[in-house]
Image (tube, rainbow over all chains, first blue to last red; front, side):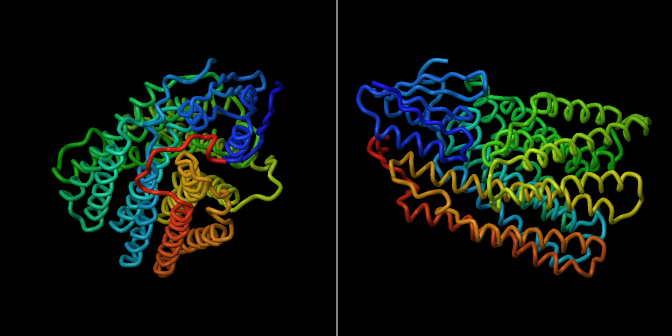
Length: 72
Length: 436
């Protein structure tokens, strides 16, 4: 299953959150979202934790944050 | 960094009512400041008149403090991953204490009642201590992932600057009420109190918020790393040295250090203006324009401060204070409120599992643009009144209109949030996949 890339760099809040939510709603069971965002999205991470999504975050060399999100 | 942050407790995310009560109270204090100037037209004749002292404290401990604490309640969890413990309780206690304290302090200063001034200052001190203890605990417990920037450190320093400002204010109120001896001359202590409030609290908090908010909302490049790393420590070092030499006879050292603080203020404002000039936005919105105007006011206010130090004229410090306090801080705070309140309304709808309307629908640009023009008009009227006091009633009315309009615009966002399904008492939250 290929990754769904959601590149929200350069967007004004809450557009990155809105794009991430749309991608989550369309995420197939074995799919994975790769979210690129300018900063650590704490409210989104809390929401993912609450709803049982697994996620991994890392800060890239260009200071963008890359978050990989999997279905529970 | 691995999955699910164990340090994040989303149940501690403050309910919408927690920050909102502060953010909606702030404009009421602005209206009160306008009414003081209306009833006391000679207030702007000098920085030492009872009316000026009352108006300054209504703006500083009313508008600025309420807005900053309300914003911090949300900034701490969103930006620093540090939710306040017991957010409802902390919000209720802090809001009541600082509201009563600010009213008592300002009324006491205006009416020349030192015991009331001291009582108000004490309530403010207790309210602040409550908030600061909760905020420090939250920041100590917060995770520190890479890429977080310097914001948590700078937020800690801003809270420390606020604590020093409040302690100096309490000392002044105590001396006025009891006649207790002071370690330095009264005007010097007032200058220390104002200086720490200007740069140690207001300046550092504005900068630490700007490091995040300007690139995020104005779509600009990030602040240069050396600026972010060194600006706040430099401000604190200059303030500490300035405070240390205040009791000494070294006039030259005092002048050099206050000049350094002015240079630092200019560096922050000019860097922000430069970044804004490189925005990737095609059309700047009202908040962007007002933040730019606030930075220009800080530049002008800082230059006026430098003039006030070397020129002995009663209007000079009043003009500097008007530019920095009203043009700079109130302008930047208004711009931030127009970003923060709609964002919070949107976020709380999403967290409640409600399909949220677009933020632009929650807060259309046109009413914001009109209110921000009213802000510019009242700044111009205040500056004119500082030079020619018979204009004070016009400036006072302009301030009342400006803040009433701000309150109406923010209330419209709350009404739009209610119409979209927002509730003060939230029921069980729905899961993400059911929301879109």
